[in-house]
Amino acid sequence: MDLQYLVQDQVDEDFCDSLPSTQIKKITDTSLNVEKGFLFVAIKGEKTDGHSFIHDAIKKGAAAIIGEEDITDLPVPYIKMENSRKALGAISKKFYQDPSKDKTVIGITGTNGKTTTSYLLRHLLESNGISCSLFGTIKNIINGIESDTCNTTPSILKLNELLHQSNDQVVILEVSSHGLSQHRLEGIEFDYSLFTNLSHDHLNYHGTMERYFKTKSKLFYKMKEAGLAIINIDDSWGSKLVDELRQNEIGVYTIGQSTNADLHIEGINSSTLKVCENGTSFEIDSNMPGLHNLYNASMAYATALQFNIKKENILSALLTFEGVPGRFNIYKHQNDATVVIDYAHTANAIMHCLKAAKDYGAEKIIHVFGFRGGSDTDKRGDMLQISSENSDQFILTLDDLNDVSQDEMINTLEKLNETVGSTQGIIIPDRTEAIKQALKITGARDWVVITGKGHETYQQTYSLPTESDLETIEFLISQSVDLK
Image (cartoon, rainbow, N blue to C red; front, top):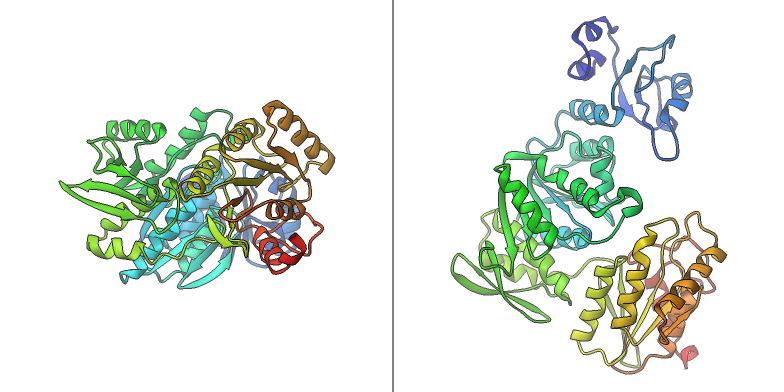
């Protein structure tokens, strides 16, 4: 594809005309991937600056370079852009021939519930004959084929490439605040945008809840003219978002306990929501424990309804949903105890997990969790407080250390435990040993709730020969004689 065509909407017309005719074989923002005929886009990241690798890219055969700095005397065309990330969105959209234009695109954002809601929605649509691609935290699914993912929201370059590969009718995207702030959705237009909730998370990145909310809100201004926002107004931030969108004449469908909600929640119990829509009352059952999953189910239901699927078919499909890896996955111990593995890593998510266990009859709750090194430290006290209030015993352990030393994190755990002043908390740094201890002290009808990692593999090596919470549980249950 010709370079002039790719950048003509991004630069001055005279400058564009002055560019030599240059054929671009492919686009990349990673110098390691450069081959002959590639366009290399230099992006300033948090840890590395792509401008430092421009000469390496040229040596590897880059046919042209895009960047933000004033650079001259390069042997290949150089195009300076105000924002390389934004330019990458527009250029990759052109290169892959606007790959989302013939698809229905759904974006799901919020602090908690994005993954579960996206999987639920894909299940509802595919159960009713509508093929779906899904891009999210756990994996990407395109044309029924699964592949690993690095980020909740891929780079815009990768996203356009994946969309180009997709033959599916619908695309469901988990939309992270990082993805929005880093222009990873530049040029994508959404038919439906969903807001699940907002609670304390990522403030080490965004600074304040207001900025976090503003970043999340950007999704709803990327919708097509006839796009529809589907929003949980029982969350105060969701209610605020509705007011803003209506002022901007953006279509909104609301879910909540307010009688003004489009899907009015009339009653709640541990397994179902009684709702009313257009004067008709009925029940929504998520087939997954917990109030949070009932809200996720209602979000998925409301979205599937926009595809003219019969209500009865949506509700019956909800009952056949088999769950999401690492999201309130339940396992039974031989002693009749219940073990839950969940990705919950905010105070709000932990509260819902522990309350779900209590609602389902847990006589005693043992909570195993930790904190990620280098992540939002301000939420840790709230997480610990919620655990101490809603569990009978909590065991603090290690999560991903990232760039923090193990000794430093253990010291943090000790200080936090002292702050709460609880007598039911202990610290076992080795995550596998912490889980083992939890199973040792559990009895019939007790629940062990392990949060923080969910589907993810361990970054550290522990005493047991396992690489995830699931592997640890399976190993310990198979070796149950050693737990006595």
